[in-house]
Image 1 (cartoon, rainbow, N blue to C red):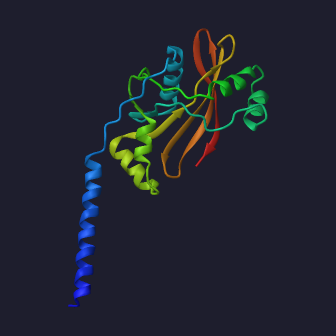
Image 2: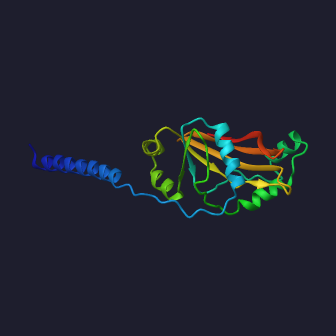
Image 3: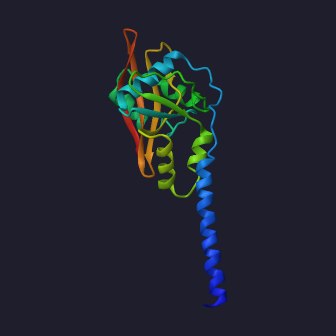
Length: 207
């Protein structure tokens, strides 16, 4: 056999072994990710988020991004504002400005979410960057579900905006579960007799 061919085959074999070894090692040494310091968030906020989790999701494990995030620019000039005003005569328009102002800065959740039938887990931005670090989103999602089996993907919340008398509230929710799977909504709530209820869920995006 040609000596140059033998060297080529040998090198290819060694590189293949090294690649497999590195991939295996990467999986074995995935670091532990500690939660960020939680910001001060009211119990009422956690109660509203937990209400939405209970009513909108059925998975036994819920993974929530620890840092808040918005997906759309909710403002006085877009369709979603017009929709809310046209379909809810008592919609308090101050909610839109308050939501925009609040969400100029992100905050970190603590472990105060609650649900009697679901396990709720927070995932940090650092861990999300670690898992979704390649050009192959399908592989990244596979890695995510290996770590978070029986979950329904990743849920992201914006900060909740209230009107002045705290009888109405609004925030955004985003849900991603695959490389081309996800969606977002505006959650509009009202408080009657001391109880928050979801008035409408308005879809904002889908992939």
